[in-house]
Length: 244
Image 1 (tube, rainbow, N blue to C red):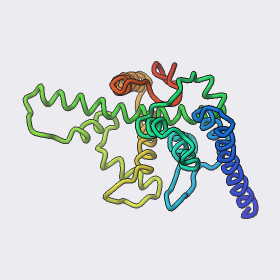
Image 2 (cartoon, rainbow, N blue to C red):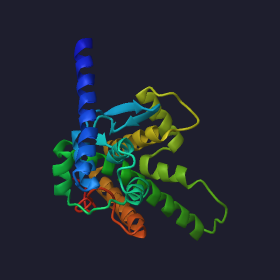
Image 3 (spheres, rainbow, N blue to C red):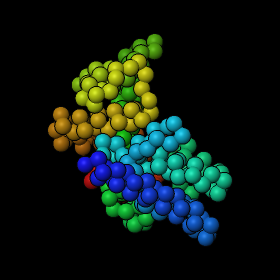
Image 4 (spheres, helix red, strand yellow):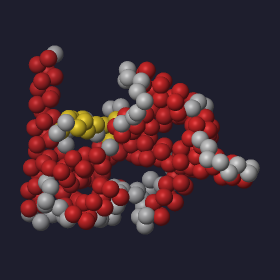
């Protein structure tokens, strides 16, 4: 068993090294860096790694692919070879330098990773948008009722969506995962928690409620992205209507 695990680890590391080599070579040969990047993402094998003391968890719960985190890792591996303005726009603002169709992206990163990306899109990106949308509703309701003092809209938003406060749900999530109960939360854990919330909501809500919440979240996401002058990262054509 140990020998098998060691072979698997070695295979993944070899795959990752091949992805970096491909990225460097493709850029050197004149391929657009973004297309080369997506091709390298398709070759990458590790679900997570610790690099330079930092944990990179690319696959949440074994099924939701955080492609932009891997993009950051690969861009770091070819530092100096990419247009700095385009790289920053992608990593910090989520603005890709090229507009690609879902079919083009699926071909570049592979069908499996594309499906995992959809899991992340709906389970993390859209779920966050749902929370923001309900927080806005709570805030507007309180203003309309004459409340002028700042209030905790987050707790009420979580109660409306999930039936419990964020504090209660976070404790439950950590107990289930075996994580320590801390005062703070890392970005990696926050993404995991958000995906856990997504699945928790699907389990406890009926289909009509899930569809309604998803529609609300997508509407919120469209507004956010439109305010930035783009419509999301990777390929979002066809993703902004109904979940798969």
